[in-house]
Length: 258
Image (cartoon, rainbow, N blue to C red; front, side, top):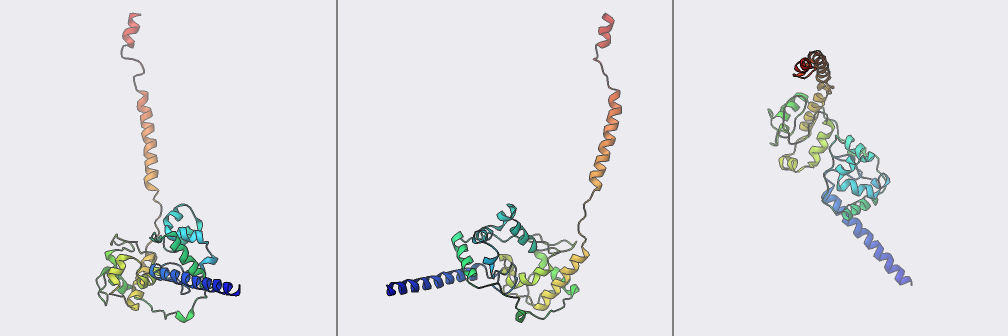
């Protein structure tokens, strides 16, 4: 009996670590570029302790297709969407079983870690003027990376339309350049990494554009003008309509015959 119990215990022990290893491999291959486990936010949230915040079912649904969950009105999904610059997480090609495996692996990594101050890097003050030149390509990146304007625009100036307008996205510059989460970014910068100074300059420029660019205000002129024009037209039509012929063309001939 003791032998059977020992065999079962060993089997469960091996199965647990095999399962955890599968989850780690899946996480490293599919999630690590945008998420950390205890290292703070990257492109997406830190997933340390996710099991204490979200259920497995919710995690699977959000990871599989976050846009559908957001469109369904799920408050938690909408809050994450808005916190991360209204950029939905791309649909995952993983199966629901594989996503559940990642969730169990994350659950095995203990409680949420406190912010690790040891990893805090010294703040480099960026130069907004240089950032503007780097963004629009009048100054080249040191490693020859493509100018941001090829895909993005910011402020009131025109730019690329391939990706998101960056006017209010200064906080995302460093995480995005570190993780390179999208295929176009990896092609452009994987072998042409930006320096910390260049990233700081770009961040400073985008922060400046967010301050200089006024929030769009609703334009009431056209609807009010249209309403006034409609009222004037109806008044004019009313006066004109009074002059209309109210009887048939043959009414006078008919009356004379009577």
